[in-house]
Amino acid sequence: MDVTADGCSVEVYRLLPPAGEPEIVHAAVPAGASILELGCGVGRVTHPLMELGHRVVAVDDSPDMLAHVRSETVCARIGDLDLGRTFDAVLLGSHLVNTALDSDRHALLAAARRHLAPSGRLIVEWHPPEWFDSVASGQGGRLGDVAVELADVVREGDLLSATVRYSADGRRWNQEFTCRRLALDDVLTSAGLTFDGWLTDDRNWFAARARRWGWRNDHRPA
Ligand SMILES: C[S@@+](CC[C@H](N)C(=O)[O-])C[C@H]1O[C@@H](n2cnc3c(N)ncnc32)[C@H](O)[C@@H]1O
Image 1 (cartoon, protein in one colour):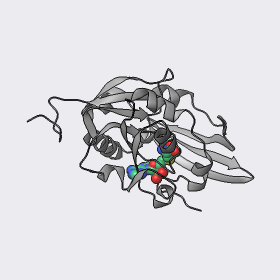
Image 2: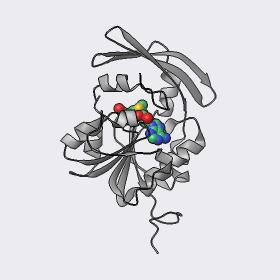
Image 3: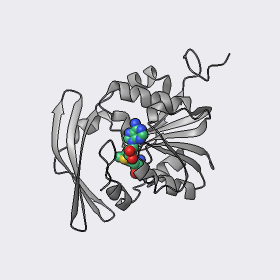
Image 4: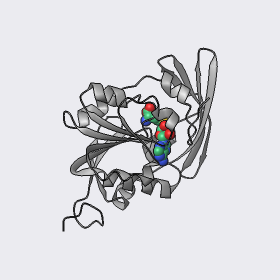
């Protein structure tokens, strides 16, 4: 059974259908946009975005995930990514930005920023602060054929650890994770980004843009 470095089961992600993510991204970017998707998994979101008319370059550090992706793919750690080209939009979904380690988050956001075209939009799915207050063991639901349940929720300061229990067709998978509550302004400012609006009413998705001036980066005007 293939499991990625961050504990995702390839088998589970092959079973999970999209849950509205492609439409949220599609509504936030220009028609036919070039999109760099960071942490694409098996292409659960990639493929519908392609069907919606976007040109997607899909990045993951798991060859086992990427083997299922039909777009252009890049096998790399996101923080190390430097493709030497920019995109209309960069997608950082799946709450990756809530990673527990500040250094990992800085690397993710720096990579996102260096691949944004000057007018490009960073599209982020995160856990907003209110999620950290309300989330509890036993919460869950179904995604397609997969039952999903949260267990073992433990809070420690700004960190929250839990296990996601997946089951389908009599099979079970567990994925443990730890994530960090973030102050959005601090996170964006330190990455040379500015907030560009909520994309959903529940504030699970937002957009950001690169700050154009006064920031040390590849795109600063000469
Ligand atoms: C939770 S899965 C989500 C996959 C996909 N975004 C989706 O919604 O179906 C996270 C994916 O990101 C990848 N990933 C996590 N951190 C990464 C990193 N630093 N560099 C490259 N890939 C990463 C994992 O290998 C995994 O495939």
